[in-house]
Every structure is written in C-alpha cells, then in structure tokens.
Length: 246
Image 1 (tube, helix red, strand yellow):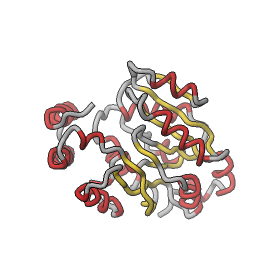
Image 2: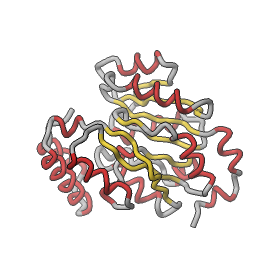
Image 3: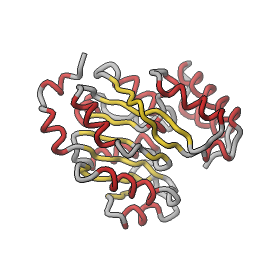
Image 4: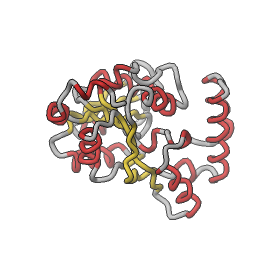
C-alpha cells in the first residue's frame, strides 16, 4: 500500500518545495566541496537547501561547507543517525535526501527522485558504483540492484518524504552503527520502496586501508550480530577491531 500522505498532498505541492539534502559529516574537508558543488550544479533551483550536519570535526569541514552557501551546523549529538535527525529538523523541503560525504549521486538525481515521488514511492535509494576498476568491487556493486538487506546501507543514498520520516520518528538516534538498515526496515512497513536503477559513485577509501576480504568479513559479521540482537557497543567495538578505518 502507498503511504497515505500521498493521497492528501498533490504531486505539484510536493515538487514545488522539493528536496532538502542532508549530509552528515565528520572530518570530511577532503570531499565536502566536491560533493556540494556537484549537488548545486545538477540540483538546479529545486533544492530547498543543502544542510551539513557535522559531528564536531576538527578540520575545516564546516567552514568549507559554509563557504559554498550551504547550511552547516554542529549537531548537539555526534553519530550519523543523530546528525541526520538534527539536519532534518533544519530542513524545509517535502523530501529529505540523505547523502554521505564521500559519495556522488548521478547527475540526474533531481529528476530521478521527482519521478519516484510522482509514481507514489515514499522512499528509496540508488545502486552502488565504486570509484575503482577492481573486478571484485564490481561484484559487490552488482548486488545493490536487488532489494536485499545487505544493500540497505547509506552509501547508496536515501530519499524519503518528510511525512514518512516523521511518521517513523526518523533515524534511531541511539544507534551508532546499522542505522540505515534500521530505518529502511521500519519505513517498509509504511510505504513503497524504490530502488532507482542508476548508480551512486562511492569512495573506496575503506578498501584502500583494508583488504576486500577484511571489509566483507566485517560487514557480514556486524549484520549477523545485528540480526541476533547484539548491543550497539558490541557491534561498534567489533567493527573497529576488524577494520582500520577513519
């Protein structure tokens, strides 16, 4: 069933206000200008705002974001889930688009999301394309075209109507890991889900400091821990022990 809000709000009203882009950051000075420039270039005038919700960076992430005209503020609570919720409180658009700082949506992201909304989807994501020619990463990316639990991470970016986001109380701010998987699972109980069959360019920096096998093993370990009810502390500590990353 379609999320009932779409029966009450016209598509024209939704698209007039359109998209608020929310970017959670922590020490992302290397990527933030590149991302915001891309979003502004291809978002035209339909973007309500670009909001950088920072986790207390000790580099110049916030200053760089502000220099572009974006809204950039330090979140009262650190953690990607809490930061994205904070960004959402500042947003004025009818659609929230959550984008990680080291990813690059396709140039058509605006029309892609518009078309998904017109078709009645309450939320959705893209597929993955890694910025690498390694065949093993192409195998990883291939499976993101399917509606699999393992493909519900935030690297694929996530769009969601404001009404749906509020109805499910946004991200679980107590989560420091697996927050993207959690919100997708809960949103599916309220709305139809769209996998846009285009790709987001995703950084391979995690793979550059670890082997493909290390990353794969860590991901599957954490997913299994999550499904078996492990605590956030246990999962975070295990992930840090298995990978050298940021």
